[in-house]
Image 1 (cartoon, rainbow, N blue to C red):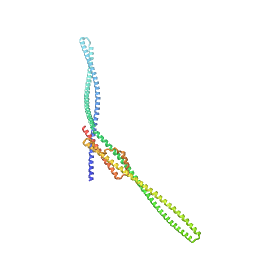
Image 2: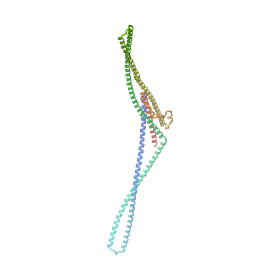
Image 3: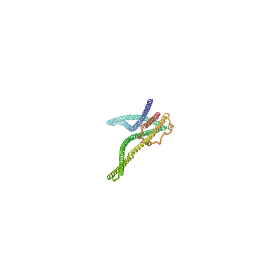
Image 4: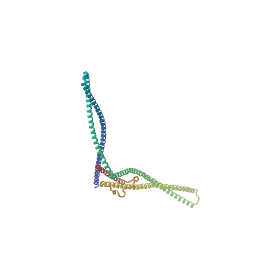
Length: 455
């Protein structure tokens, strides 16, 4: 049952991921289309501006050429008028000469022939000049017509460019108005706020993950130090065991010394009994015996030496026993008790810090869930329900990153179950953050799709 639920959750997550990927892909395609349209419109405007500049330059050159041609045409007209006047003058002179010749027939034939030849040559030259002028005038009229056609085409191009420019300006004005309306609607501000909160939560999650990695490394180092302390504790126990063995050896030696002392005491008591018996015998039989006195003195000196040696050995044994009991054993036990107390206090403080970190991770996950509900409600109803953020513990201002880092620094020797629980909580918080990111991207894509549809 649990496996089937897990597979169903994985299928739901896969479908959500596919839907979000499709929305992102459509949004990217729409964005690329809009950018391509804007780029094409910009290129068309630049090309139109270049064409207008080229047309204006050509129009300026054509006007200058037209002015030059008009000046040349005026000059040719003046020359033609001058030639016409000269031709009228020559005809008038010929008519006068003709009348004069009719009246004066006295002139010679030679003079008439020369004048006739001169008039014929002048007439041929004038005809040639007239033909040349007519040809040049026809060429000038042809060039003027071509320039007028070019001017008409340039005027038509200018008119089309002005119309396209006016359409482009109108489209830009409409798009600017739509963008301003979208900005004034407040949805963009809401999305920016949500993105800011999401980025802040993501940054906090990254910092927590970095701190967790650092503290995991510290915990590993602490575990290694604990192993080192354990090895040193084992060596201390070995040393304690060796001291105990040495103490047992000393106890055995003390027992042997005591046995020797007891044997010497028995010998001393036997000697005292022998001395008493001899003294009784001497007193009962009477008479001084120098040999017995000498033997008695010798026995007394031996007895005193033995007693002195027994006292010295007893004092030495007692001092050695007291030193062994008060020195090595007490020091080793005190050292072991101090280490055990320090380890127990450190483990207690670390467990408390781990519990606080678990509480903070659960609170972070609840905050992310609240934001997810807010985004989902905003997406479904297209309005912001601030009541979804109500409740205790929405935003914990007291729990700063320094506090979390300080609490993480105490978790060095946590158990595997506590560390697994902390990792599970952080993984759940990261999963909630990813879902919130997908929701924010979906809302942004929807808003931009609506804006593109409006455009």
